Each structure stands twice: as structure tokens, then as C-alpha cells.
Amino acid sequence: MIRTSVLHQTHVLVSREDPPQTPELSFKLGEKECVSLLKKCGNMEEFKQAHARILKLGLFGDSFCASNLVATCALSDWGSMDYACSIFRQMDEPGSFEFNTMMRGHVKDMNSEEAMITYKEMVERGVKPDNFTYPTLLKACARLPAVEEGMQLHAHILKLGLENDVFVQNSLISMYGKCGEIGVCRAVFEQMNERSVASWSALITAHASLGMWSDCLRLLGDMSNEGYWRAEESILVSVLSGCTHLGALDLGRSVHGFLLRNVSGLNVIVETSLIEMYLKCGSLYKGMCLFQKMAKKNKLSYSVMISGLAMHGYGREGLRIFTEMLEQGLEPDDVVYVGVLNACSHAGLVQEGLQCFNRMKLEHGIEPTIQHYGCMVDLMGRAGRIDEALELIKSMPLEPNDVLWRSLLSASKVHNNLQAGEIAAKQLFKLDSQKASDYVVLSNMYAQAQRWEDVARTRTNMFSKGLSQRPGFSLVEVKRKMHRFVSQDAGHPQSESVYEMLYQMEWQLKFEGYSPDTTQVLCDVDEEEKKQRLSGHSQKLAIAYALIHTSQGSPIRIVRNLRMCNDCHTYTKLISIIFDREITVRDRHLFHHFKDGVCSCRDYW
DNA sequence: TTAGGGTTAG
Image 1: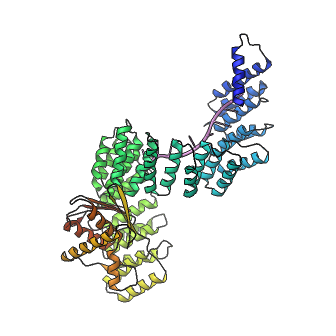
Image 2: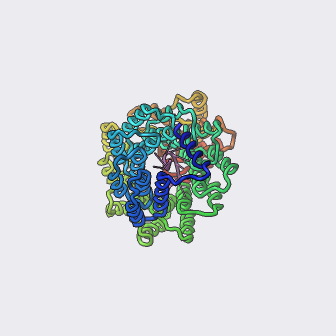
Image 3: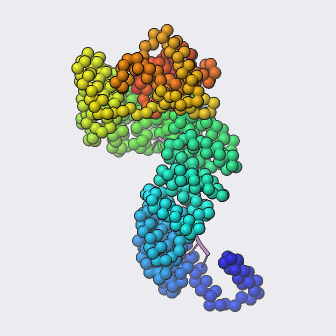
């Protein structure tokens, strides 16, 4: 109604042949001057001059001019919230626009608390919040995160009848999502009458941030069905990240196909996400091809490629790419160096690793972080240089963490150095982050040395601490669907046929001389029960499922959340011969490519 | 009269 009447008046004014110079119109001219003065400002100095001029012209009394002063100062990149605040304080009766502006400024300055305090003042002074007030405040809550305050704001929104504003709704989805309240987040989305791309984006990102990758991909399909399938690169990058985490190569390929059909000229972020997806889903060749075809590579593209090569055990290739990066004049950072050192470590390139570690400090001025030291301990440990690894830990300027000690412990086991193993285990057991498997490794080392009393003591200590294993799972992609198996899984709809297959697999394995390695079963149960538990490990169930549902000779790809146990490793090597399949397993750190009874990790992982 | 939401890689 108000807008109609304003439009009507404008029409009347415009249609007059000879408009008289009313005092109101000259006032508007002052406002115009004020806006043009403010628009020209590019820094605080210029702004202060404009401010002085506005005061001199007596325009500050006009609320429109004063509001624009506050807004320019609070929201410009060169602005100052302190200065904006001082102007705001001089206003007699700031209204919702001025309060909204101040809150936006605080949020822009990453000062969420101050935004909330300003809102409180707004309500206390009886200024009515509007639909522009809440998106800003909800963003502040999402950042803090402050779900309780967010819920109070939600109540205010309902009280004021602003719940149907699409901006307010999208902000609510985002706020609940960032605060981890996925249920409410979905409920707000479900109740919307009209949705925008931002609504879908907020919802999909919320699921992505909580690691709910399957939902993320399902929602993308729903979005497509509702006709929102546009070239939203940012959402596609989120989804690619979902594919990468899940190891869903076929789904990732679909996204790639979509991009090729619908987006002309992929940008560097999308291309890098695609490369990472291919590399981390096991398709090294495809990732490498895309990388080579990239018109413009940046530091992140190189970083992804180097880490990808490291994960696949191609250390020399990784170093070659690193050299190319330097030749391109790109400056490496600490994350790039983690990839470089991993590349050296996974390929056993000790000398090169040491050189890179020194170069990082001397040439690029990067102080080593705990991750870099972790890579170095791993590098030396793998190469059997246990004493040097221990020396490095002792001499480093940072407090060693569990990752370092665990790395040393496993190297000690592989290279049969009980003394170093005991030192590492002793340090590990002092930390809160100790794991049941740490005790098992030490106990197995004692067993190898036939120190049975120490075996018993270590096992007793482990049980007395009440340590339990983290639940392990394996994902396997069959016909573009991810199937998840946990150890001893009985919940899968096709459990029966999976266990039937498992039985057949074990039968054939026996002929190949396989006998279960029960030394790492962490339960205090008899030998038969241990064998039973081993045979139900999630990776074996996933392989069985894939053998049933994929054609003969086709590769099998598995993603697991934990490190592989010795028994699953031996078992998978043998399965690759018996069933003549290439099996790729991605664990948290690297790929195992099983083929013809051999694993690419050379039995050290 | 002014303005607000989502999202982009290691």
C-alpha cells in the first residue's frame, strides 16, 4: 500500500508540466549531494572530509544523510566500526535501517557478539526489527555457534510474522546446519513454500559439513528433480567433495559429465576438485590426465596432485610435479610440503626427504609443524633408520604427539627393534589418545621375542584401561550406490548371500595356504571366536558383496575409515589371485592396489 | 529512498 501511494505521488510529480521548486525538493537535492559525496570516498581520510562537508551543509539532521554516513563507514572495506559507532551514537532516533546497518558492520568485522548486543539494544529501545534484521543476526549465531540464541531469534521471527521471507528462511537453514541441528534445519527447509538456489545450497552444505555424504548426494538428485539443476559450480564442488570422501568414483564421474555438458570452461576450483576426486577415488590416471590438461594451475592444484601421487606411492612423480611447481614461480606453503614429504616417505626416498625438509626452512622460510615432523619420523622409520627417527623426536622443538610415537612404534615392529618399540609405547601410554591397538603392537613384539610375561602384562594393562576399538566400516560402490558394511554386519538387506559368499571365499583361501592371523584380535576370547571375528571384518564383507554384484574381471574399489589389519591385508592379496580381480582399498592415508597377490604398499602401511 | 540469504579445492 505504502509503495503504491509513493509511486502514485511520483507519477503525479513527473506528469506535471512545470513542477514548482518546493522546499521538499531542494531538501532532496541535499540528499543527492550527500550520496554523491559518500560514493566518491575510497578511504577513511576522504570519508572524514565528506563527513565534515555534510555537517557544514547542515545535512546531518536529515535522517537519510545520517543513515548513509553510518552505512558507508560501517560497510565499506576501508571503513571503521569505531567511527561508524560514534556517528550512530549522535543520531537522536536511529530506526531499524540504522540498527540493521550497525549489526551488519559488526558481523562483517567478525564481531558476532557485538551484533547480538546491538540487537538487544534495538529491542530495548522499542525499535521494531524487520525482515532485514534477521539474516544478519542468524549469520552471527551460525558463526559463534550459538544455537540457543538462534532459537530465540527464530521465536522472534515467528512472533513478528517474518517466517515466510525466503532470506530469513535460508538464514535459518544455514544457522541450524552450522550449529549441527540437522533435524530443525531440514524441518525449516521442508516447510518452505518457495525455495531458491541458496536454500538448496544451505541444506546441502549443512549435510556436507556433518559428513552426511550420502544425504548430500541424494539431495542433489532431489534438487535436480525440482528443476534447480543449474550450473551452480559451488554446489557441485561441495558434491564432488562428498564423492571424494565416500570414494564414490562413478558418482563423481556423473558430476564430471554434468559439468562437461552444462558448464563451458571449468574454473580452477572446479577442476582441482575434480582432480582430487579422481585421485582419492583411486583413478590416478584420470586425475593425472586432467591435471596435465589444465590451462592454468595454481598452488592448490599442485598440492592436490602431489598428495595424490604420494597416496598412490608414486613419490618420484610427486617430486617431479613439485619441481615443475617451483619452475612455474609458485611459492610452496606448509601444506604443499606435507604432500612432498609424504611422497618421499611412501616411496622410501630418504635422502630426497631430508633435502626437502631442509629446503623448506632455508629456502622458503617455513617453520616445520608437527605434521612435517610426523612425515620425517615416518620416512626414517619406514627406511629402518629407527635410531635417527628417535633422535629427531628428542631434538625437535615441539612436543611430540601420539601420531609421532605411533609411527615410531609401528616402524619398530616392522624392523624388529623392541627397545625403540618400548620407548614409543611408554610415551604413548602416557597420553590420553592411546589406542587399544598400541598395546596389541607392543604385545606382539614381546611375543616375537618370546617374552611371555611381558605379553601377559601388556594385555592385562590394555583390558584394565577399558580401551575399546573404534568401529570400523568399509564402503564399496556397486552400480552407483555406496554400500556400507561394519564389522560382523548383519544389517545389510543381502546379508545372507554375503555370508554365503564369504564361506566360499574362505574355502578357496584354505587351498592357497591361508590361515587367519588372530594376533591382532583385541578381545579376550578363545581362538575359534577370534577367527570368527576376523572373518566378519567389514572389508571382507564389502569384497564378498562386490564379488557377487559385479562382473567377472571388473575392479573392486573399497574405502575404509581405519587402517587395515594384517589379516585383511593378506586375505585381500590372496583374493586378488583367486578371483583374478584388481582390488583397490583406500584407508585414511594411502591406497593399497592389490593385484596378482601383491600389494602396492609393499606390505608396509 | 538505502540493505539481507547459500557456496568454491590441499
